Image 1: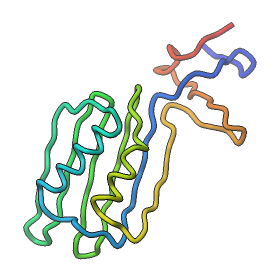
Image 2: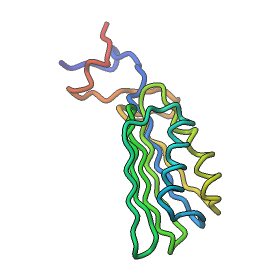
Image 3: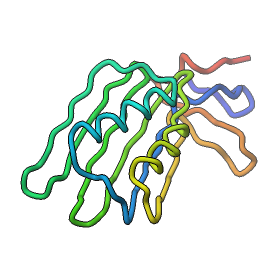
Image 4: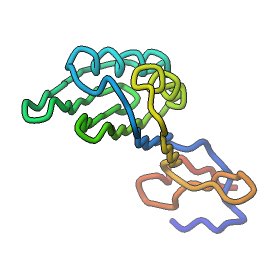
Length: 145
């Protein structure tokens, strides 16, 4: 089924995906510390934790971690030798992933954070209007006239 732009009505995006690069950071080691920060992020965002997994690296003290959420996931990879961490926060539903940012700042006290936000399941034009992807799997989210 093809839907022309005149027939398409705007719907909510499927989710928000926040990519965070954390520079000149501290507290990038320790499984428990990293897990506590990620759990605090999930709680701040009103997300539902299903499973956590944290893996330490003996060579540099870095940590990789993943929290699987009912609303999607939070992941992290730390490089303490470079005072750097990368986080991936993807949430759908009523979760609010942007609420993770103050938690990240509190725990890592970065000199700089680069934050990129993606709207998943569509795009936002220069007027702030959301347009869903016209993909077979997403057509159920569209309403036609």
